[in-house]
Length: 71
Figure (cartoon, rainbow, N blue to C red):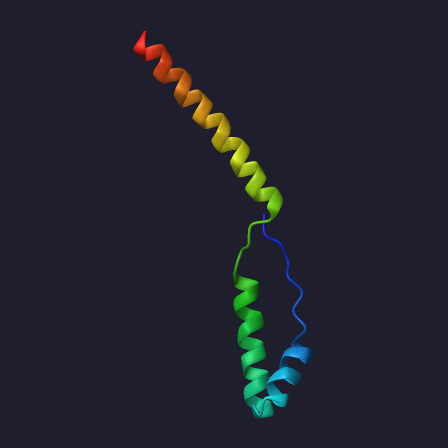
């Protein structure tokens, strides 16, 4: 499950403009960053906990199988 991150394009452009970046370039950087952000998928804390739970369960199954095969 991906999570949305708020991105303030106006603030981003303003920050770049304050640093001396031309307006057209600042807008292009802002658009490129926003597009890249929209294409990425980030795991939430819940996603990670879910994966940890599944990993722990799988690990327990493997240990049980190994134990059964050793007897």
